[in-house]
Amino acid sequence: MWNDFKKFIAKGNVLDLAVAVVIGGAFGKIVTSLVEDIIMPIVALFTSGVNFTDMEYISGDVAIKYGNFIQSIVDFFIIAFSIFIVIRLISKMRKKQEEPPAEPAAPTEAELLTEIRDLLKSK
Image 1 (tube, rainbow, N blue to C red):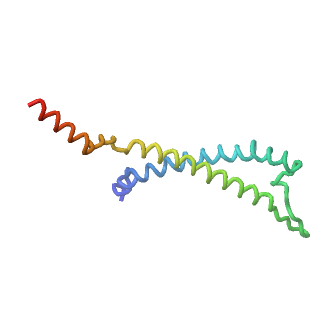
Image 2: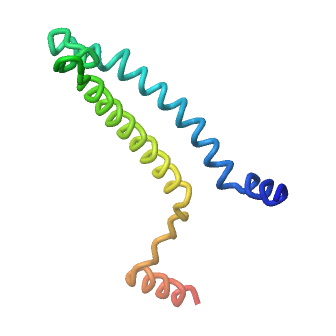
Image 3: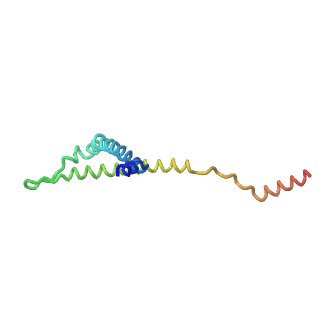
C-alpha cells in the first residue's frame, strides 16, 4: 500500500495539481485584496460611500447580510476575468511556440516558365 501511495504522489498530474492549488490560493488572496482595497473603495466613491459589506436586512432577531453576497459576486467575477486573461495569454504563447515555421511560397507558373526559359537559353 505504501508503494502504491508513493507512485500516486510521484505522478506528474498530482504534483501539478498541488502546485496549482498553492498558486491558486495565493492568487485568490491577491485578487481579494485588489477587490477589497482598491476596486470597492472606488465603487464606494461613485455610490456616495456605500460599503457593500455593511448592507443587511434586519427582520426581528435575524440579519440577512446581502452585502457580503454582493461582495462575493464581485470577487468571483474579477477572479474569473483575471484567470480568463491569464489562460488566454498562456494559450497565445503556446500557440506561437507550436507554430511550424512558414513554408516558402511555391513558385508561380510564370516564375517556373521564366526559369525554364533561362535554363534553355544557357544551354
